[in-house]
Image (tube, rainbow, N blue to C red; front, side, top):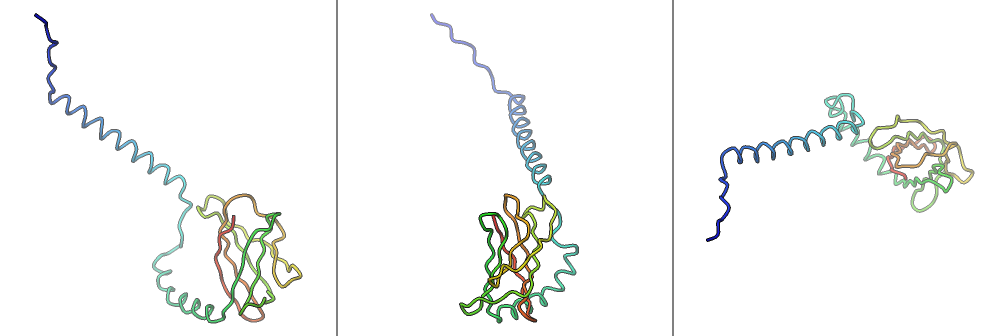
Length: 156
């Protein structure tokens, strides 16, 4: 006659241990993810969202005027990582009178800085200093004669 091992009973204590362990793991993952998200958040997008919402219609009107100018802009980094800007209208180049470029890291982990732009002799502009490796958001204010346009581009 063979003896079978005695069956262990599944009690309420077992179920309690499973539930407590499950929720402890879920909470640990949630707290870890929240901490990682908080540590990589660069900061606020606007100082006051209510004031920004009040200016929204003005921004749309300026964007419509800018679209009617028909300008096309091109922003890129050359092989030496100097930023270059060109401007065109109806397939022909426009000479840029002046340009202001502010670069920032998309996550805000590096402070924004303004690049000094000079004419490149071909109607475009080039930065005097190269950009470090990485992804950069570029906010441009480009002027041709008395007209002005604003653009935002990403460069790598």
